[in-house]
Length: 295
Image 1 (cartoon, rainbow, N blue to C red):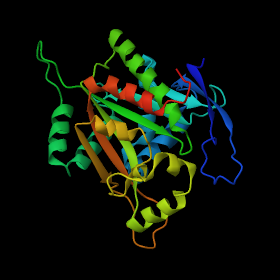
Image 2 (image 1 turned 120 degrees about the vertical axis):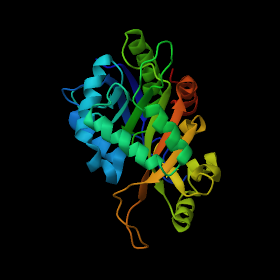
Image 3 (image 1 turned 90 degrees about the horizontal axis):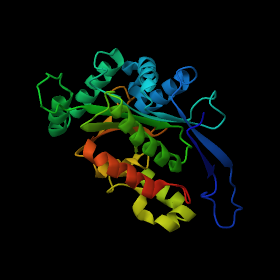
Image 4 (image 1 turned 60 degrees about the horizontal axis):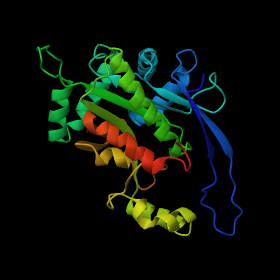
C-alpha cells in the first residue's frame, strides 16, 4: 500500500520564453516502503548513478541488498509512478555504520569515505574517530553514524524530497522505540556534484538569462561562491548549512579531462551533520522545497 500520494505538474515551471506556449505533464508520485521483491535492480542503478565512476569498486549490488534487508525495520522510502510493482525512480534511507560494519559493502564504503576525507585532515580525524570500532563502556554515550543514501532520476522534481525526509524522521523515531539501531549521534550524507569551467558557467548564464526561473530567482542562485561547483540535489545546500564538515571530491576512477572532453565533470560530496540538527534540516527542507499547498 502506498504511504502517500503527491501530484506534480512536472513541466509547469518550464524554461521556455514568454512567447512560447507552456507545457505541463501531470504526474502522480506514490511513496512506498522499500520492497526487496521488486526494488533491487532499480536501487542498484540509482546507487551506480550516485557513486559515478567509482561505483564498480563499491559493491553497489551488495549495498542494494543491504538497503533492502535493513528496510525490514520500516526505515526508508521509494517513489514510484506506476504502482508498487514498478521500479522506483527515487529512494531515501539511512543505514547504521556500526550495525553493518561487518557487511563487505558497508566496509568498502567506510574505507572509501575515510580515503576521500584524508584530503581534509580535520574532517578525516573526526570521521575516523566516529567510525572507529566501539568498546562498550557503561553509561558512556558512544558515537553512532547513520549513513544517509538518497538518489533519484535526473528529472525528478525536488518537491518530492520533503515528504521522504519527513517520513524518514518519523521512521527513525519508531525504529528507536522498537529497539532497532537507529539512535544516531551523527548523519553522514553522500551526494553528487558537477563542476563547470568559467566558460561553461558563462554559457549557462547566457542560456538562462531570459528564462522565468532566472528572472524570479536572480543570478545569485546559479552558482556557489563562484567556485563553479553545483549540486545535483538542491536540498544539499541546506544540508551543508547544518554540517560541521563538508568535502567535495573527485572520483578516483574518473577519466582524465581536457578541453575536448565531452559531458559534465562529475564528482562526489560528503557532509557530516550532528543528529541534534536533523530535525531542523527536515523542517527547512520542507519549508523551502515543498510543493505549494502540500501539508
